[in-house]
Length: 162
Image 1: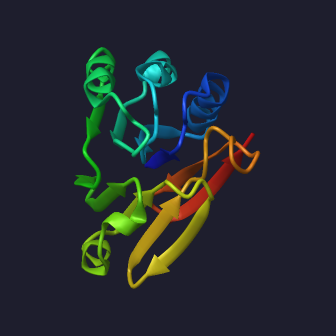
Image 2: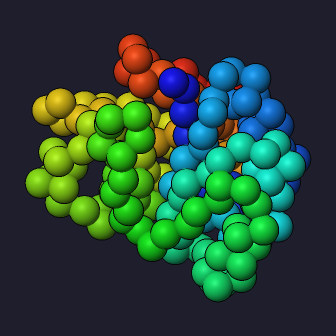
């Protein structure tokens, strides 16, 4: 199973749309979003692609009720307060916007921790946990619009860059 990872979309619709298309083309059957959609319309590319989305709110998501209402219009779109823990295909995931929100013990209780906030793509391990920041989908701070594909079988991560 391949999972698309994205964060910090910040309303940049053309980049979100292209990244979602590339995630789907790369075999993603689910996308996880680590927050900072900003406006409800930033969810439209996920709905248009008809791909399930699991995500958390970031600190720039000023209208969680509006985002939740828009999310409910799409099939399989679920948004939660950060951090949020769940299981996919037998793997424990934690999605958090800002990695500083959680402690080491929370990290160690999961196979994967997906986070955003810093706008910089990175992968690292802590014990048996893989931490992934897919970078900034918007490209506003560092000039590169990025997302990532996670292969659950190999635990490999591929950064997608526009």
